[in-house]
Length: 402
Image (tube, rainbow, N blue to C red; front, side, top):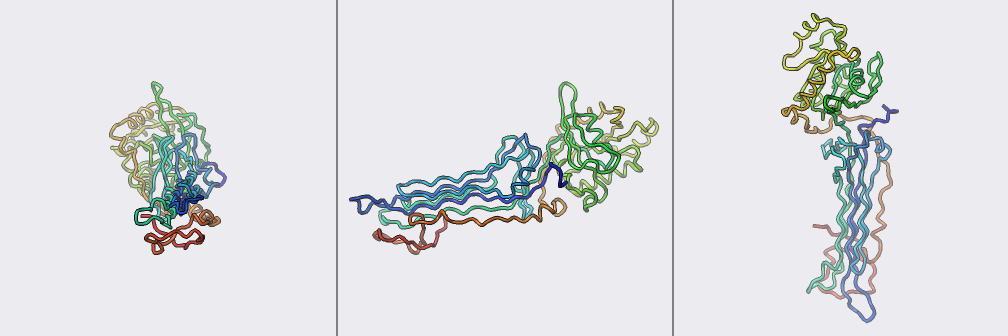
């Protein structure tokens, strides 16, 4: 997967902007000995915003952009001049992207629609200038609020493809062949296991100019939940599917047993997948006669529809489309298409991403230098003391924003 352009799991470090400090400034003019406070407020820090983009299909751009920092808010100045707000950073992601906390694995948010915006990290509020604190009993407030600090978080972005039908099966079950036969997709097809190394999408045409999307994922094997084969890494792409199509070849030793193994692996990954509408497709059925089909049908579960198909000869393809369309449009099936995102655990993580170490220069605090940009401790506040025009150094203590 290192050479592939399809990236569906990436870990990045985000930091919103800190708020600018309020100004502790007094009006100075000739013939105005006591002009009073006029320090402006600091600007808001920039937000980190996720935006859905239907033209993106991979998280590859973010793999080479590990650090995303928003702009800091500028400090206020005299004359009640407000500081400039920090620049927001908008991150374009494919539709179907899910965001997790990289440290705890907690689900944070998801972006499913084109143009949808989600505020991931909020920028810090700017501090209030000293003119907010003037009163009849405190005419010379010599303090101002600092800006709120930035929020820094390491997150995991996980792409879950949006499709109506998901193909599930062992390697060489005929999934890619079926996708190429019913859509314009051209996945790699060969006579060795694990030919498909990344998910593929295809649009399947149906009657009356209708269509639906079918997703093909790499084959899974028994023990995939324990890390065997390609593991369960790609099963995230069928979590959003309304219908699961189990592909089992006709030359399998025990078709019913293979179906149970596949169903068990799905349950190990996410128990909610078992509640989805399921259909069994017996591929490579051109090798079977009617008598063998009847014998195989007796061994299959009675509560799951099954279809005998052959992508090479076209046998049963029309019938399969009818069954899939009926399942997709079934009202009782719409609720199961919505998923509850489980927290990330060791089975769902990608080791090379989790072990990635962020290296960056610590942020400097150059913007808070200068006489008018400092704030002092509440212990230093005076009741109504005169302003000392000669004083140009203030204590470094800061106050908290309620």
